Image (cartoon, rainbow, N blue to C red; front, side, top):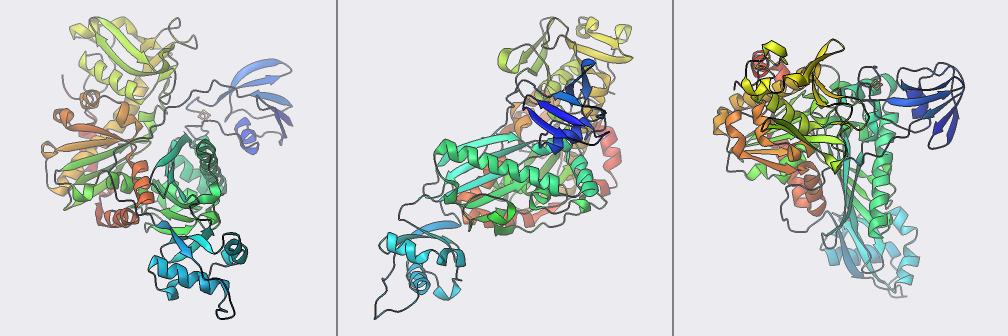
Length: 594
Ligand code: FES
């Protein structure tokens, strides 16, 4: 069957019965598939144009049975990805450094090889034992010409005891730091001579086409192999690097060091490691050690000798991103009892001080990122990002100041917290209707709660108010999704405290990392009991701490070593194995009483 894909004008041929989603993947086009193609999220709608006319279908559920045109054009939503975050000043001392060297010219009295003369002079300048420096054959192949062209004065680029390159004096020495999130990828392009950030970039993780959360991606890679997912993420990292280099007007050939953080699944999939062990209890990772490798072996189009430094993982569901966040937050020096929560597609937490830290992960799911919520969307133009009932009116704000298309995580938390506060949602999570509503303030808004397609729903915006001309709803099912996510996180917080022998009231600082943590209102998070209600004034948003941790490791070899010891010294609590988890989880499903 012939499939024309608009607006890219690609034309491919597929077998009869191939789904549109499969066809798009064959054409290297990835559209969002938060439910992993199960037909439940309804977020993969495309326009199908056949001889009979055009209609909107779910790409994952629609088989191609004739020649068709598929229109996937959507307005670019300009997703909001958080780049900045908590960081610290560190002494610039990257693992990669350039040393200016005057190499002796060959003469009848010095018949040593080009490499010997370079190695000995470079070792002396860098104060390294020359016996530790191994030959770099790729470099040696062009060494004579490089030395001649530069009149025997060159910069030697070292990574620890290894010579990576020989370049004209003053040539750029650059690095890239990445945070591979389940949903988004952030990239920082840094001048390693000055420590200055030259550019930064971000994009949605193309693996979202295989499911919104790590479980769906693990399942896909166990069934189909890791190649597709590995290829997709490596391609994304390269395209971000190219974008940053173009913006900074630099060449990627000058990139000698790359640091990467990501959750354990993202780490494994990037490295081409099967995440199968994460699929089955007791969910062990394939590797936790920090990994140092040659960047080119992992698909990077940078200098052929460039190094790749992966930060360590802690456990199957507490990965290098948590280590990076804890490093940026300097939890290994914390005097105050600190809770670090990274609320992304999953919820990872670390509780403790410089003396002892314990981490856990909660299967919060992607509800806080808008996935699996009927009108949920990421924080992009058209998303309701804040909502409140004020002076008898329902008010909300929309990113970009346009008509609303859906609701993102911060809006979801606000709305639910407010629905609980005014008595439209009871402590068990039931959305109340008509005479069930007892609270006076709730009664003012009873017309907004309706039975739609057999399900209770709160109307955020009606047809006239919304962008697409259809009602935007927050349904009873959506409330249950958020309730499960917040129950899991709140239970994790309590069990961490119990394991550490402290009470939640003892927490002195609550750091919330991740985009959602940055935009959500701490009061609303307390309002639904995601964070212990009394602790709202101890909450600080720390932005993309994981990405900042990767950047610290790029700027300082000492920080990279510190990340390793932080990862090793952080204990891990497996919530699923904790006998109190189930009871605590059930307790924490309740919304705080008003
Ligand atoms: Fe198609 Fe979810 S309904 S990906």
